[in-house]
Image (tube, rainbow, N blue to C red):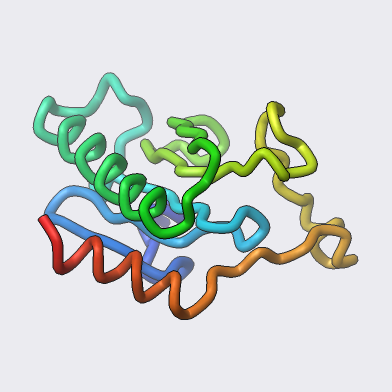
Length: 140
């Protein structure tokens, strides 16, 4: 059985894709949260070819710029993971100084907290989604 990130099409909505990498919308609890996933399964960054590492960084930056230009966060937190999900991926977390946990790491809700609606969902507006898509697909 493949991992959840290998089967990203079943679990996520794509925002951008090239031959080696896909970027998907992730947790609705962080407005604009995107996960950038290497399409080939790799447990660790040291397994990536230079081409794959470059592709990951290019998509990360391209999507991050589109988010900055549309959402105007105070800053973006960038995170590379290979721990709980043994598959190379990275997160884009837009942050605003008005965030209740500004200056702290991102804390996503547990399943119980999400179920009990202890966290507020921060979805993007349809207009913001269209602006980001336009930047990603129609501008170089």
